[in-house]
Image (cartoon, rainbow, N blue to C red; front, side, top):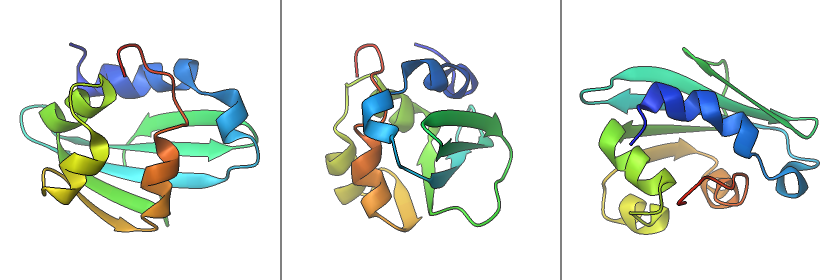
Length: 109
């Protein structure tokens, strides 16, 4: 399984171009646990950029243990179920979370 840092580095290459056309959103990730850190996803102009650190005025902020987010992106854990059962927290525009499921074609996800 990749590290969280590797996951964010790889995400742009798995972007679903049809799903992100016309989308302009930013999501901040505050990752806790063994692989702690801050990362962001920025979708604009049909492209995805990711990086380490904080981004100003994100549309949504997700606080998650690293292992939970890796399980979600690999398809081992349903994101909606994980959110509803408190495995991760989110604030801001929660419709972004639902849309984000379609933004990427991650292997195994």
